[in-house]
Image (cartoon, rainbow over all chains, first blue to last red):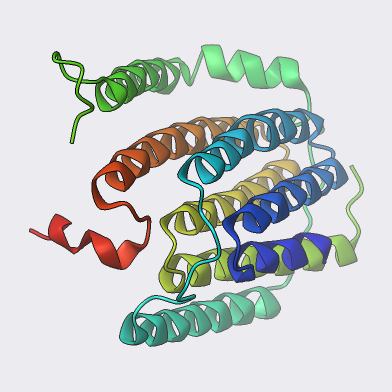
Length: 158
Length: 104
């Protein structure tokens, strides 16, 4: 409930700074939900990466751009209406899906939580996606440097 | 692990609500920073259902997928905000309607 309320706060507050702080609360609520599922590692990563790193980026950008209260809250009218329609449609679809399903709880093997097993999986069966991800991160660093680099004559890139 | 039936229902409800809120914010809000935050909300709801599936089936692959998703999400935010800073330098605004010149 708390998580949903703060998520609504993210998209409904007029000041982007309030949105960012609501997002922090939402991420903490999500990490509590992960703890309820016994996924302590994911809860830890959630707090570290999302609440620690991503939110700092968001708050930094909001402060840097000096975003005030936006004059007009919503986008143009017809995409807004389309957005409301699409959201309501998908929401009802997913809600019907979860209400209709019989919830079969399979007894878990108990190894999902074992981080040693996760690491074993990561460096054996999923080694190739892991390496692809590392190359992706390298490309990302290069892209950010290119984006942020001023041109040779000291001018900021237009 | 013992999961109560109630927690299961609530978890699905939270996932659906978070995804819907994120989608709504992404489609409706005008501010590009808030659109990026909405994308984060959607990614987080998917993470939640990955964790749930992983814990219910007893395999670690869902956890692994969540780690990958979090990495890609962090990368996406970094690139998105970098592009946004450059766009703000050109257009002096972050409202999505102002970026019409990006159309092909």
